[in-house]
Length: 104
Image 1 (cartoon, rainbow, N blue to C red):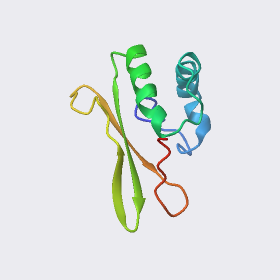
Image 2 (image 1 turned 120 degrees about the vertical axis):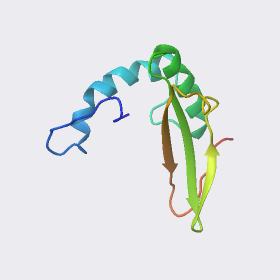
Image 3 (image 1 turned 90 degrees about the vertical axis):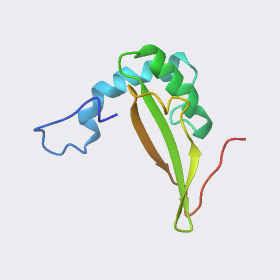
């Protein structure tokens, strides 16, 4: 979400304290839609849909990839991936040394 909340000119832009505003904006989305935090892979679509309904002027497209055995695997591709207006967020989902599929 750093794309929406740049910390230009700040020292240590990697510190989470610079993103308090984004946490305050995102937390109600989790709460109002009964999405646990941190969520699991199968919560990505629900979060994306809820976020885009709340923020139609800055939609997101969230894709999730996994890595194992020196290969990258697609775990989730957004239904919104063809939207030219959406900001694309690519996430790498790691769990130990293997891909974790928790979509049960």
